[in-house]
Length: 140
Image (cartoon, rainbow, N blue to C red):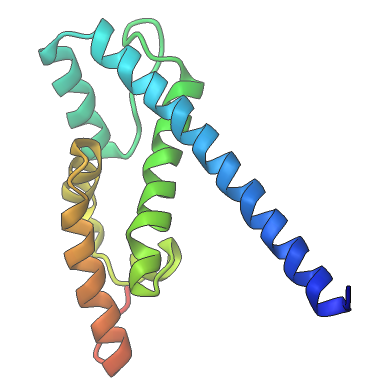
């Protein structure tokens, strides 16, 4: 086995490990979201989604029935999904994407993420990628 083959094998192993970590993280986030849906009424769920959309933070604590670690896992899962399953398809990362997003749009984007409306991000990312390619993209 030459050095290139060894490097390719190591890269593949790291990709497999990364994918396994991602799948485990998604499983944990799904578990938290399922528990949330099972233990909170529709109005409670809406209140928490509204708070997340406006602030970027999921309310935590006994009063909200959400542990801080669960909130962090769910927010990170949203970010990872956006990065891995949307932005990469358009040649973007979270950092490059948010260079072109107005902070006034954050609540609407967080609401779309909470609802699983990933098509919103695909369209937005596609427009940003095209503008970056032609040099007409703006940055904050």
